[in-house]
Image (tube, rainbow, N blue to C red; front, top):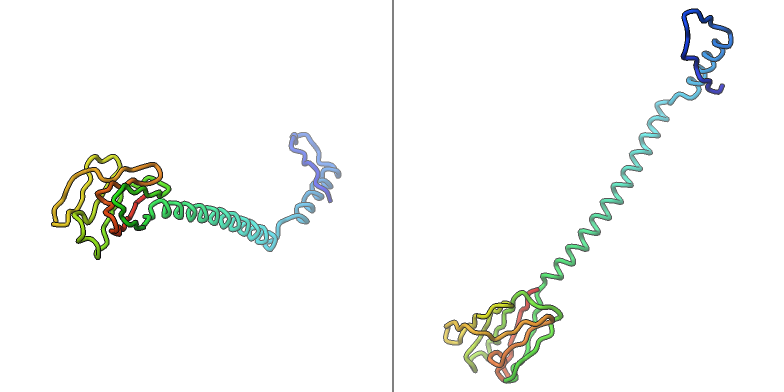
Length: 170
């Protein structure tokens, strides 16, 4: 039977008719026919759970992928660039594709006895840069100019034929 809107405005003088009983009995039967079974309730709960799991798995995967992309970008940003050059007794321009935060330049061990300086630590914007002199002393000066895409190294760190190794930090 179809659901019929129950009478809700009963008065003390109202008499219950057969139509009222039929409506009441019909609505009771309708409730009986459409009541939720434990199996039906469990099926709905399982469907809701699976939907929630699917949603959270999707969001978790999206978040995880975003986090992985971000950490890969950060790792690439802080990854130092390592290289070498051979001195030419003139300024050397190294195109790194970025302006380093700081640079370390060292002469190779087999050629470092041929000249005074064996290493330098340089920061952009620093007027004074620290060079390790061959006789274990420090000298302060400006030997490296930082550019937007790399560095320019003065002749003091470009002795002809000497191999230099550098690490440029992003």
